[in-house]
Image (cartoon, rainbow, N blue to C red; front, side):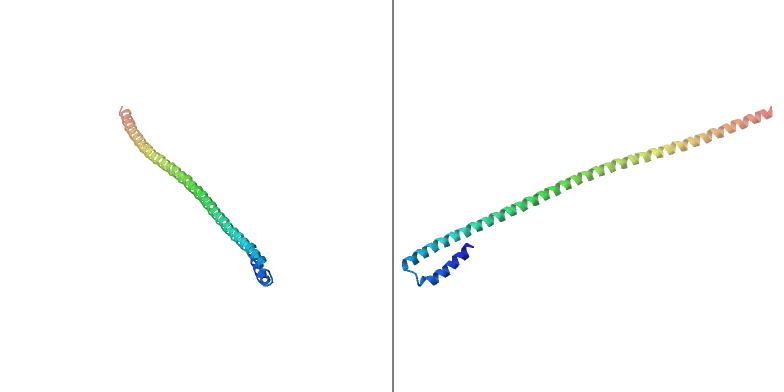
Length: 139
């Protein structure tokens, strides 16, 4: 806005320059130079502010990115820990299952032994009963 106003005054002053007095013209040119220098300084300050705003925006974006990255890393750690716990539990349950299977095999073996023992005892009893019946018949 200031630069455009300055340029308009410059073009207006060029048309007025033919009609103006030399002293007034020098004063006008001095004033225009001052305004130009001030407009130039304002432009430099505005560019500095733009750069600062851009830096702040980049810092903020980087900070938000870092926060998101930190959250994602934390989530990965939590999930990794949960997975390790699940694997530990699965291993523990697998061991328990294996122990139960071994115990079941031992019980089945004892049951088979008990059945065989029972058959032997029945067979022995049958032999004894048979021989007792024969003695009774013989007497």
